[in-house]
Length: 287
Image 1 (cartoon, rainbow, N blue to C red):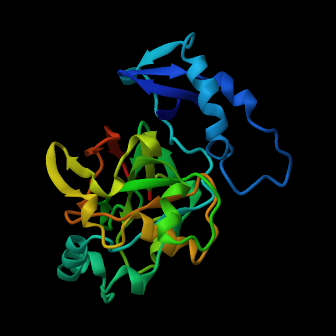
Image 2: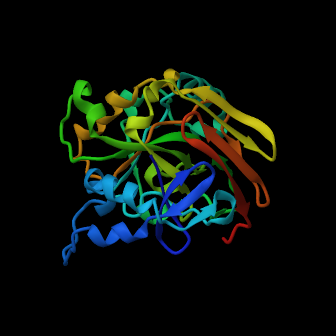
Image 3: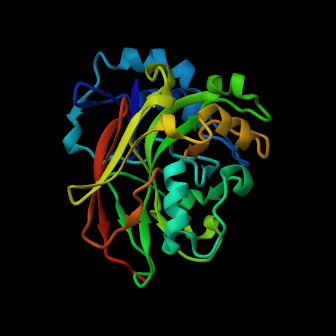
């Protein structure tokens, strides 16, 4: 199943090039009072909502995919977790490009660990990436996004895949510089998810997916998730050894070689096998 959020927060099921509005099932979500839970309620209740969503499809109003405004498929991720230098090709280019490494010793993800991005940086692919600090280098990074479906803590790699709700295309936009990654990568609009989330049952092997990114029609990044240094199960094991993962948390699994700067007016096109593709605009910097 392909699930999306679109227009003014509607819930959609994507099928055959159309988005079916199944927002009525949101009324089945449990009501919450302050303090709110540290999880995304839709993702947490996804299993129980699948049958009502399928029933709602019978009478749902639908729209062409091209006519809707896609929001992030996850509304309230408690954490957006990044996996740095998780393709050997990106490790190699980071060692060679001073504009990427900024004097930092590029070793391994095991040495560096993972990092958090602010949830306030999150947008959907129908929005724009609004560049900040135009006098500095701002890079594109395409990644497979993994959406956690059940709470897990210190989970072993052998059990990790059962904790996944689905997969999406992710941009980990990056301001280059000497500041810590969690600071430079948490700028508003610098985390992108979209256009939808494909549920885990539809992806037989997420460690064997082609992914690519073009800027203004020119191929910049092209690889396959089989080249991940830490595969998806190991990333979940690694992340959950430090923090509890909750439904709706997102792991951006790392980017391959080919990262490079973007400028206002650029159009980014990206795709991941088995998920889909989208185009997104970069707009003028505002500071």
